[in-house]
Every structure is written in structure tokens, then in C-alpha cells.
Length: 157
Image (cartoon, rainbow, N blue to C red; front, side, top):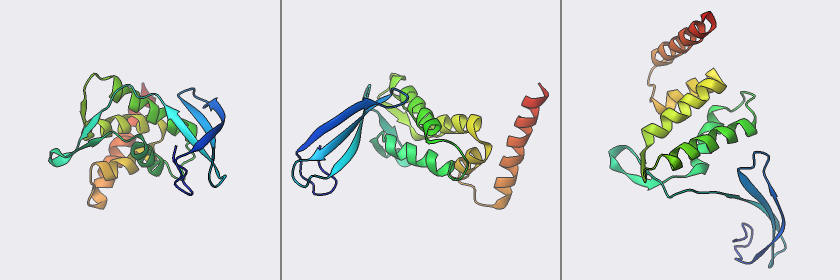
């Protein structure tokens, strides 16, 4: 593992333990060259998945990018990092176990929206505003009222 401080490729694992959700292994490492300590995470990857973006562009599935988007949507909303990790892990698992080597970015976006809708309505609207490319305040109003209507229907049931 390459040291993030000096770029030396020789490091030693000092401690390994599973994360709280048992979805990955946390490893504390120490660089053999500069002595700096850093943490890495090891996760199971079931298969290589390519994301098909608009314009038929393709790139490898990046869990970090997905996690960053969800974290940004949940910023200052009181959603725990553990809950975000669970959502991202669930989406990653769905993508990897779908049996396809390619997945449309729109499918991933819908999975994120479904997950955020259950966690926090404001985070859901934030993500939707970028994902659905809201261009005017009216777009927010219409989407937010639809979210409120769905919430009211669920309470009436």
C-alpha cells in the first residue's frame, strides 16, 4: 500500500479489525520509510461494474464518488455516517449482484433517491435537485410539494 505522505510503496499493517457493520476491514498501517501512520479499508468487490453515463460515456463504478454524493446531500442534516455507509453499501451490493457488467448512471441515481427518501426528505430533495437538474425555484417547489403529498398519504394510511 502506497504511503499517502511520502509515496513509498512499503508499509506494514499494525492492526486489523472489522468495521462496525462488518462490511469491511479497517487496517492501521505504518510507512517503512517515513514512519507515518494511516488507515485503509478493505471491502469485498463481487465484480467489476462499468457505469454508463449520459452520452454513452463509461467509467468504473466508484464507491467513493457515490459516498461523497450521499454525504453532500445529507450535510448538516443529522444523518449519521454509519447510516450513510449502510445506504452506500446497500446500493453497491445491489449494483454488484444485479448480474450485469454495466449499469446506467440513472439506475444508480434512482437507487440513491429511493434510499434518501427513507432517510431524510431534505437530503432527498437536495440530491434530486442535482440529479434531476432543477433550473428554477418552481422546480424545487413542485418536487417538494410532491414529497409532502407522499408523506401525507403515508401518514393517512
